[in-house]
Image 1 (cartoon, rainbow, N blue to C red):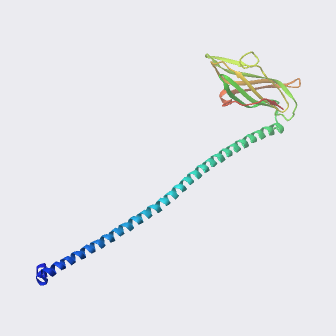
Image 2 (tube, rainbow, N blue to C red):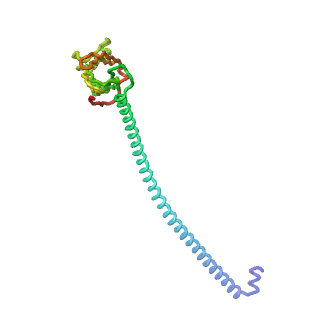
Length: 241
């Protein structure tokens, strides 16, 4: 049925009332629909806010945990570095003790040897501008332990202005005086000397006549390359036994 037919069937008055009623129904439906949609939006916004709050709390918790783990990691790394350094120090001390033990074993219970005098553990250190420090241990390797004495001559050979030159202790040169020694088992020696600026050292030589009391027990001579005994740093002390 068309609108004209319905209007003719109901009449103008009833048709107008029907239209007004339908409009009211549509308005009411639209209002309810709007309220429903508004309530849905409100619930959605509320749910989103709650989700944001939950995620923010979780994020803060995770951030705090990450910071704690960073601190723990840094502390662990510092502890590991400290433990590593301690381990290295202990290992170095053990090596030094082992070397010292080996040395004293050679002194107390030496191998059979006809030598009455040797210079061992010869090391050369830079002590300043053209100044050097020579460290060594004078040792009596023979099984018979009696006091020996003598004067150890230190000679340094090299080149100066293209010519071969040798500086020796005891002759008024830069090297100083001969090294006096007197010991039964060993004597640690530390001697400092100065060389000219334009001198290029190549060889270190040690020579001595060894005496037991006043009896000459023979000579000793040792030659070493300068670069073979030169090390970094300065160290050493003088002792006898």
